[in-house]
Amino acid sequence: MEPKIIIHGGFFSESGTNDDVKHAKQEALREIVARSYAYLKTHTAVEAVAYAVSLLEDCDLFNAGTGSQIQSDGKIRMSAAIMDGVTSKFAGVINIEDVKNPVRIAERLLEYEDSVLGGPEALSFARGMGMEHYDPEIPQRRQEFEEKSVAAARKGTVGCVALDGKGRLAAATSTGGKGFEMPGRISDSATVAGNYANSFAAVSCTGVGENIVSAAVAAKIVTRVTDGLPLAEAADKTMKELKAFDGFAGVIGISAKGEIYHVDSHPYMVWAAFSSGVETF
Image (cartoon, rainbow, N blue to C red; front, side):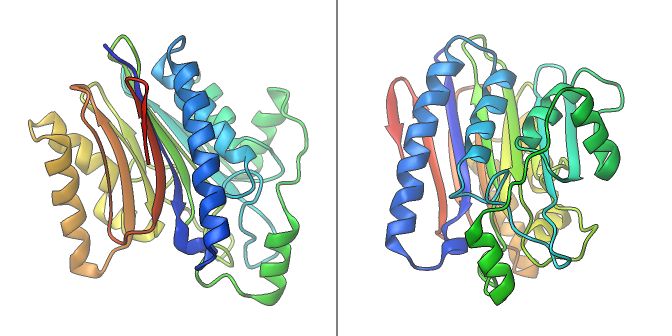
């Protein structure tokens, strides 16, 4: 089977109407998806999604890892998750501070029975696995925080879905939050509403976390594919259900049949895909 991969960088609306920023994000996604596709060809789907999301976390153009939003108390707290479609194992970290790559901690937690950790305990686990102190704050986020000018910056998340050469699926998602949120708020990214995979399909979401949780978006799409719907039909049906409460979300997904699909409730999600050597954006 030909490997396939798709990534997203959240909604472009988080950076306003600056065309230079949009172009920079598009170029970054093109580079990251190409590197991740090359990696996928010699690695499993679950290894590849962790790799791709770690690259997205390292790029300060996106709201995950380096460049994460600052919460109302002036601190950065990040969340990330990964799910292996082969084992149906989900792992994640919620509201972790002072680390570089939350997705790498989620990846390691796949090996443990207690696979979702939050707050100080998640940080303790990260230090135990050798992850050193890292400040993900960048000057732009501090300026936005001080000016309280991030009203449009609240829909940023990064994610990756992959299908490897042996037909295995996986999904990973990471976020730096929505900015100015109440400390303790939990996003969709480290839940099955925002990140879900099984042997039939894998999905990663971005948007307003509360909306995504309310609609159980990722898990619902994957369940519908499992029940026989084509990926595009399953995704479109789920997205239509968001309209009942004016939900805001974006989705990327791949099915075991090789279907690859993306859809959003507003046409601003930035994404990139790589399949059969052909890049689309």
